Image (cartoon, rainbow, N blue to C red; front, side, top):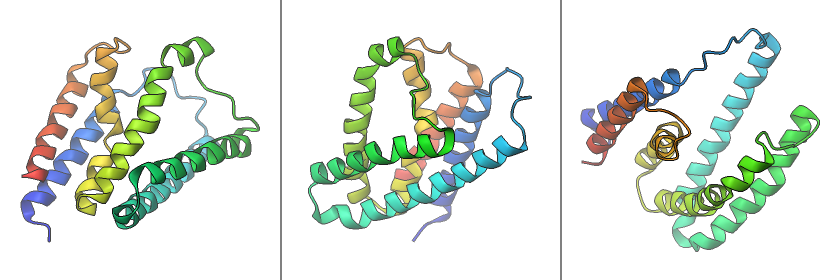
Length: 176
């Protein structure tokens, strides 16, 4: 049962996330984004959201009685198969979109997030309310901001920082 305060908290979280996303909008011209690419992007976004929702629901229901490490292994195995398959289907290849030097430099982040992040995600889904867990699990753009600041990949930005603070306030309201 969600109270008015919980709904307000989720609204604040969504608003903060939107601020972070739009504050990071590229200044580069988007003339190469034609209707075909836009349509493909929207279809992929909807498909991703559906799969993410199924993943969240399955994790919240099934993960309670299964070892989190086993679930994480299954998820990573499925990702190893699906990612190159989707890349080949959409683009004819599944090459990395980052340079080899950057991949090597940040490989520790990929491993930490890929396994540690997934492990914490599965544990969180199995041990909290679905509405709260799913709201918090979609905060990757927001959580990325302080990490990018810390790694000096991005310079601090007032609007992005405001969005992060807004989300933190929303999370605090949601869990209290």
